[in-house]
Structures are given as structure tokens and as C-alpha cells.
Image (cartoon, rainbow, N blue to C red; front, side, top):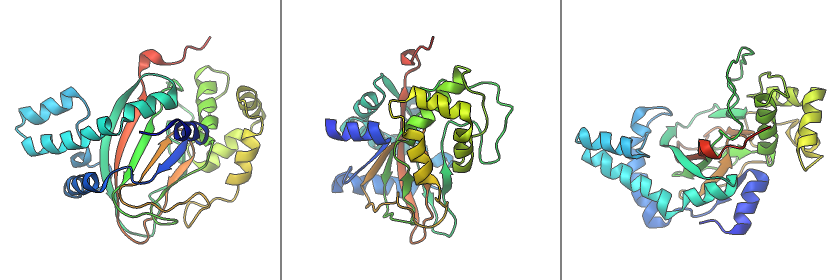
Length: 276
């Protein structure tokens, strides 16, 4: 369980790295399950049960091995008090939204370029969005690394405090204070912030009046490929905990396949902020 200092760092920067999140014995068990079950991202074999219904399906299909594997994976939520982390980050009651794992093969292309989630589109953009999510509808993700990662080698890189900008963008669009335009990629995100109305709204909404200026400065020369100042080393069993609403990327796994296990938490709908 994270202490109060670590929670504050997570809330301030939008992410935190936790060394030895899993003990050696926990890691060994989790690695065996994920090495057997996890394939490419999105493969159904890599999704683990996270609620009563999904566990019941395994029982009804007599998939007892998968049931036991899923139960071991799910126990991490209790043993590491993941709900506590989510509740303290959001300041709201939370629910688990997903558990999955996947392998990103060693190669020469980025896993994902610099981007923000909950942005409705990909890098190609689309201005014909009809339904906008409540800004609280955003996940806190716990990535547990099951293989080594490092600078320019599969680590999930993150721009500090960009999650706060992301929240104000979603809030402004949801409350119709801002007009939607694509902001998924780093380039789109920066272009969105250059619009004076958007800049003024976010600056007024934030306690940090230098938030956008600082972000624009540190993100100006970032490239999708190669090493970044926001990269880090992590060993199997280490974890990165982050808000998906910030700008992040999955760097290129240049040295080895990358295997990760992910837990997603978000606020329960009844606890969403009510806007006037």
C-alpha cells in the first residue's frame, strides 16, 4: 500500500513508479500465469475475471484452471489494496474496470506514440463526436512489469502534471465551455492548447497558472521513438501507476519482449462531480 507521501506524488504528477510492487514469490506465480495466458494486446486470452459475472462464466464453462489463475490475479487487488490507491487518487469511491495482460514483441516500432486516453479518436482525429464522457470517467492504471524495461526499451513514459491539463480539457468540453477538436496525440494536444480560448479556460481553472506554459516547454521536442527524459528503468515486479488522462507513450521494446499486467480503476458513476 502506498504511503501518504507517495499518494500525494501520484496526485501531483499523475504517475508514480513503485519498485518491488510484487514480492519475489508473487512475481513468480504471476509471471507463470501471464506467460501462459497473455498474447498480443486485445487478445481475449489476456483478459482476467474482475467481477462476479466474469468469474461465474469460467465456472459454468468448467474452466477451472482459468478460474484459479484469474483468482490469483484478482487477489492482487486485495493484497496491494488497489482500491485504496484509487480512492485516494480520485477522492471518490472507485470500481475496478478491467484486468488484462499482453506481450509487446521486441522490435523497432513504438508500442504507442505520445498520446492521451479518453480523447475519443486516434491520431487521425474526428470532429463529429456526438457524446462526450464525464471528465471523471477516466482510469487510474496500474502497470506491473513482468519483464525488464528501460529508456527507449518498452517503458511507459509520462509527462508530469499533464493529467491535470487533460482533466480540464475533458471538463471544458463536457460542460460546453470549450469546443471539441481532436487532442489524442501530443501534436493535437499542443495545438488544442494554443487556441486562446482553451488556454485561458484551463489557466483560469487550474491552481497552477504556469501549468500550460511549463507543459509546452517540456513537450516541445519530444519524439515518439528513441529515448526520452521521461524514461526510466524498471525490473520485473516493479509497477507504474498513472492517470490515463495525461500524455504518455509506450516506448519501443528494442531489447526484449515486454510483458505487462494491468489493473484499471475509475470512479463509480454515482460519485461523479456535479457541475452547475
